[in-house]
Length: 428
Image 1: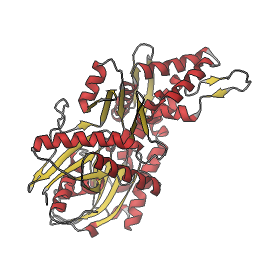
Image 2: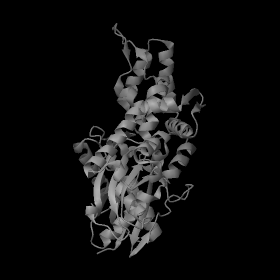
Image 3: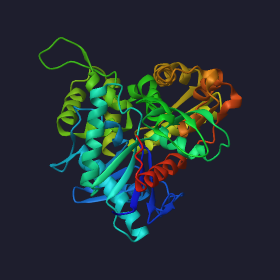
Image 4: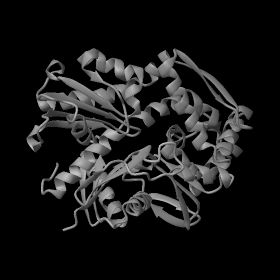
């Protein structure tokens, strides 16, 4: 039996890999030499053509160097539970979603194997508490991940809930038994685990409840588009088809794709693209036509990635100030908008509600009230959003919160899960 296992934290925004190799723990491996933190690889794929792919920091570098031709994919993990999303077409070549995830996992595997100088066919891979609130869609997402892992060359895989993995890491900090809530707030999902942590060991019965919500950082970014910015790109453009007296508005199937970085790239697919061209021809006013022209510049000049980076910067700005300016100055797309924290809180109300419904279900499932929780450990960038943190402080008290939201806690727990597996103990 091989005693070498990879531990993979495959995230919506960033990915990390560690290993349990020949009886030794290896923390985050240096995967991306062009990244500011080489252990942190952006979950990005860039295809300049169907036969060539770049990953992580190099994907962005090459994308810019090659005049933003080809296709750049980000947040593609978020499509996993969507049964109607099969994949995409790059220059007449079909690339399924399982292919995209498999290609990325294979690259992580190759880079880790090169560092360890050893071929590895077993992996512990993190999974969100819920890919979807729908049980069928959640199971479908996991099935896709299993297929992608096989495509990447893994013969055996264990999937471990990411918040449970984070709990293993936090266990190292405690000296006496505690009931701990782990909140893992990433780009795509918000995940919760309630666990009885003991310094001396772990038993599956210590996991009191796991739950979550398929919304987090990307969903919060999308509110800036849906409530204000998307109308600059034709979301509300009106048109009248030839031989018809009916005035129509851009259909939701198109306008809703504008709001999310994982979905907007698919407006370039042939049928949708041709439809938007027709809408532009039939636009009711110059203003309607100009908005769609901006959408074409956004798509054709490959400005989607920098535009959503600017949105994320705006969101971070509102964590430090009551208002901030969104400023995008690409020719033809010049936009200045002022945003306030009050607006952000109002627009994000539905996302916030869904996130905390996941937390409430977790507490209910464990049969616990907030005052029975000894410690709240938070990880992931979205944990730093003030109204998320404020809600947790209201529920549990500021003194219980540990908010050093670092990227490596989930990975550290996945490596520990791999060591359990190596020693014959399965983590569920």
